[in-house]
Amino acid sequence: MRVEILYTGGTLGMVDTPQGLAPGADLEGWLHRLLSGTELDRGVGLVTFDHLIDSANATSEDWQHIVDELWARHDDADAFVVLHGTDTMAYAAAALSYALTGFDKPVVLTGAQYPLGVVGTDAAPNVTGALRAAMAGQSFGVAIFFGHKLLRGTRVTKTSSWAFQGFGSPSVPELARTGAPWQWTAPGPRGCGWDSPRPYRRCDIAVLDLAPGITADRLAAMIDPRPEAVVLRAFGVGNAPSDEPGLVDVIAATIADGVPVVVTSQCHQADVLLGHYEAGWELARAGAIGSEDMTLEAVYAKLVFLLSQGLGAEEVAHWMGTSIAGELTVRS
Ligand code: ASN
Image 1 (cartoon, rainbow, N blue to C red):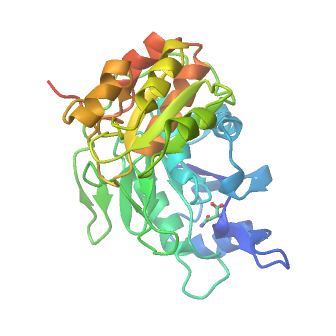
Image 2 (image 1 turned 180 degrees about the vertical axis):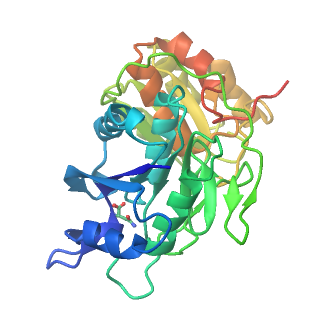
């Protein structure tokens, strides 16, 4: 079995500099020492990206670069591991999931909270765990391995800036948990897939958090000029201050201009049901789309994916409610 590792950047391979942590560690030498004498000694290759980044700098063009590199090597390996910064790894995992529904080989993203050169780093368990998951012979598509858990790529969110258990999938069970032996759960429905997706492009999407007391003028100013789409992070099951004069009108006018507005929740674990309360029903009546149990990361990457396919507002609304890669729970 052969696994190809794609190294894109992140804390895992960083070193201290006068300006703070930046890429610069000898990842190749470290990996060699980590795997030498193990059953993985010979079957693992490493591809280092020319421009290693802190994932805070990642854009949808970087997601596309990873997709292209994976396809270019599709026939060279049985499975792939992507070393990525943790800050935006959940966005990247969702983005790769939509773009790679036809890839048919495991892709496991991982990173670390501490650089590989620090005593007690989580780099080694995360990389070896990701390799083990990739080689397990299970078909789960794109996933994140982190802190002893394997999580679905479309369901994952970063839950801690420091804990070694830094990721979770609040709405679905983990795919696997380490141990001797590992405990696996069924991966859940895959979604309908997407044939021959067009490449990711940069999109202008506004992600807005509501807070108590927000006025219509403030909301209007935040989406002027008009973005290509809006993600409105509302309260609870998707409620907004509908008594605030003019606030729902701002959303209605945005939608009337052909801009999709997706309502998500500020809750870590959420199922957005517009219309459960009057305060959310007003948004639904204005034409806003509820995100159901998708994470913010899955919603954002999905909007970039759909806009990159050249879809208009109505088609975007349709696809937001359809599972492409297992990102939402389909209700009968
Ligand atoms: N800033 C880093 C990154 O996302 C954080 C990390 O990897 N732990 O690249």
